[in-house]
Image 1: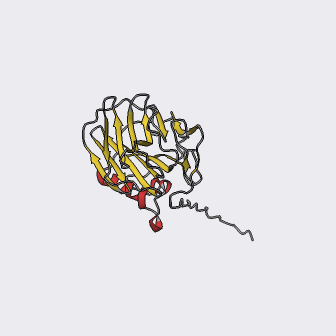
Image 2: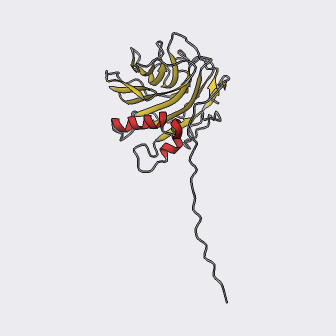
Image 3: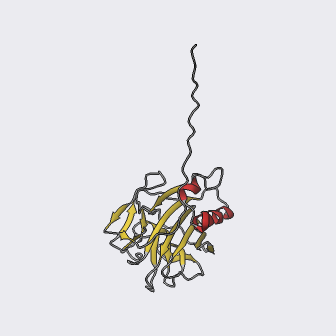
Length: 247
């Protein structure tokens, strides 16, 4: 199951940042059951006064990739209204201060307006931001949050990675970040920096990078979980044993 009961008092966070510099990608699955006409935060890399990278559901129910530099909130916003009561995939890439993109179920919206770089982040949040406003709605579900290092990616590489995370598994399942990062000789090979809230609601970092989350307040199980492909087991080959027969 996913997690729910989000608020400014109920959220996940760590000061052991999974990544702290551009370029980066945030990927997640969300289920909106409410209809609050206000922005809500999925995931945020913040300090106390600025948002370095903020992936949100805006007041019009569009997925957005946002930054806040202390003066203005500058975002790229998808053009697809988020459905109510079903799982959807959201993602935000932050390539530079002049280029960020939001995806809603694989469909992109790009903003190239100069955002001015905010302060370096100090905390990674899921379900709220460091300004203690725009928490995710209490009744909504969040799951399958992953964060990626985009160093060396072309724009086409980023689009391909988002496509795999949205619909890269068998039978139209979402791609599993652990399978994707383990693919051989791809731009995203080994680039997974953090992965949390799988079907077992694990807030331990599944990527193996040790960026475990702390729960503040109390989060509870959501009623369902998005359909994500299973982790492909690794195969180990036993060395051949030579048996000598002594006459």
